[in-house]
Length: 129
Image (tube, rainbow, N blue to C red):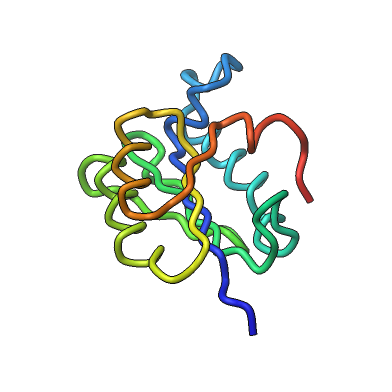
């Protein structure tokens, strides 16, 4: 049986990477991202075959976004970056782990733990599913 890959998405960073009016409704934009991520759990992504545990890390106004089938939502108690690093440290060992963010400091922190990093366009360019 294959070990489930882990995909951790920095919601604030990915949502903020597209100037589509997200600032008017941060929670709504984050919920739309969550819904776009759901098929990845079943279908995977290029270089990240299924099954995939999809985790969306939220903070601030988006903390009220609920999980959906195929997407676990983690509301950061403090910094979203710290929550992501904690997840990678606790759950990313021994399996393929990809973090989606454009944050350079976060990129350095998670690659030190063995995770791969992809930018927001990796998720937002083509539709998945």
